[in-house]
Image (cartoon, rainbow, N blue to C red; front, top):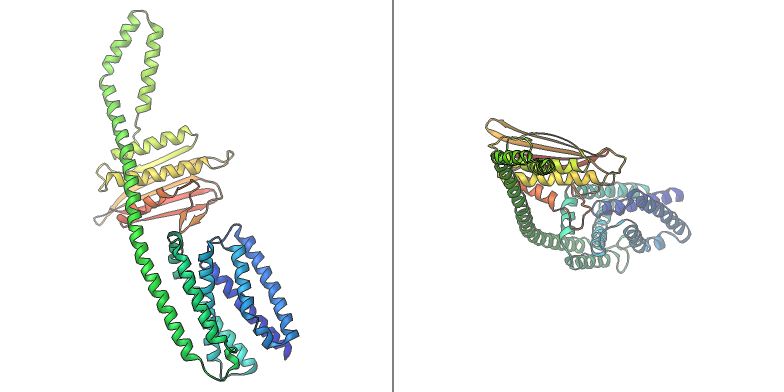
Length: 437
């Protein structure tokens, strides 16, 4: 019977350790290499579990239970040191929030099994905790994580205050449930203190994060406008340059007769070398201004031609199928912003691939109308290295201060009720954009 009791205690310990680990993994950013660090943490947890059970066998249940808090804190700190890539205030906030929820779940599970005793009590207690732990972890992974990571990216010193709030609630719950004796050794019922404290706990958390979300929403709106304005200005300048190049090429074709007259005069005067030099110079000048017929849309044709030439100049095999009509019902600068950012990212991705890899870019763009609704579908595929990391579904830029281009594409797509997707698999990076026009 004693062995069975020790096994149940060990199961409870592993259940707690699993909950702590999964709770952290559902919210924090993991350090690289992730698998190695997670494996190290699991090995340490197993060793601590063995030591805890040995202590239980030697000194008894009551002494072992008094070590619960320091052991749990130790497990959390080990996990943070090994795995967390977040700043300490963020990691500590997650730790104390996890403690607050853990204490509440343990107390509720105990209340639900007070009518049972012995082996039945321990089994029911494990089952109740499993259900409640699972519900919280599912909520974290499915709903809370993307919102929490957005706050991590934006908030700074505010995390110090939020972490203090979580810490003070942990102290309050520990006093209520563990002082002067652990609650399961007391005859009185502390449910009214427990319920009141957790009502305050959830209310304060809700107020804090609702206020923060309002501030974040305002900040993101301003940041979105700033990025779009910056990108639009840049692409307007490039588009104007391309238009000027087209106009210059047209003027040169118009003045072609004058060039012929000049060449004939040189050849008639026996200045053959000067004529050849003049002809070569004019040929190079015309080639630099040529805008290939990539598509019917003038602005898209200009910017795509420019990037095709740049890609091929860097030895990148480029294929493009752009079916963009001349009268596309879309703001010209917004279209150029998406195409130029996608092409620029594709070229940079190819240039970062190892020399022995084939470098290629494939572009497919199609416009369709169905029941009066227009859709523009843009797909870029390019060769890429295998070390691309993603954060919040966006590729992490390897340039200092980078990432503006992908955000600009996302904001522009949102304004057209569309979407942007980034994916990397088997050495191929794919950018997909869908716009409703």
